Each structure stands twice: as C-alpha cells, then as structure tokens.
Length: 108
Image (tube, rainbow, N blue to C red; front, side, top):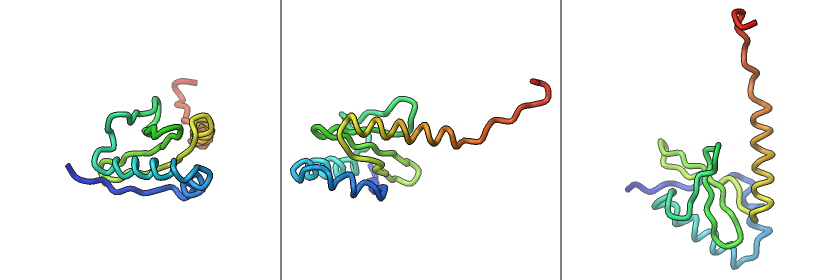
C-alpha cells in the first residue's frame, strides 16, 4: 500500500501549543501512524462530512483524506467538546456561503 503525505492547516500549530507536551507526543505518533493506513481501527468518518477523527487520549484529531493525491490534511486538534463546537460553526459558515439554488420558471 502506498504511503500518504501529511499536510497541516496553519491553525494546527496553535492547537498543539495549548496541549500538554506528553499528549502532543501521543498525538504526533498517532498522526505518523495514519501515513500507512488513514482509515485504521479507531478512525471514524464523521457523519455528513468528508472528515475523519482519531482519538489519541483526551484529544481528537480531525482530518480529511484526499485519496487521489495520497494526502491526509489535518484540520484541527483539540479536546472533544471544543473541537466539535468549532467544527460545527465552520460547517455552518461554509453552508451559508454556498450560492443559492436557481429557481426554474416552471416551478414558480
């Protein structure tokens, strides 16, 4: 199986700075393991999204898998309650920025 390349969203560095060092080591070790198999046991696809989560200890890693380019893009790292709230707000913002569907003259 081909190895995936890992990329990080810029804000992930800030996410890691607020986490204790012993937890950061465990998180980075888990991310390194994703290179071989990004859908390994314990990695769960989030419902209604194209993101996955991994659970190293009390923290969560949210990431996207881009199979065509063999890339794992780490989007956010943090504690469970905070990470899902911020992810939900980001999804709502993305939905609101979508263009409105056009109405056809036959439907009106």
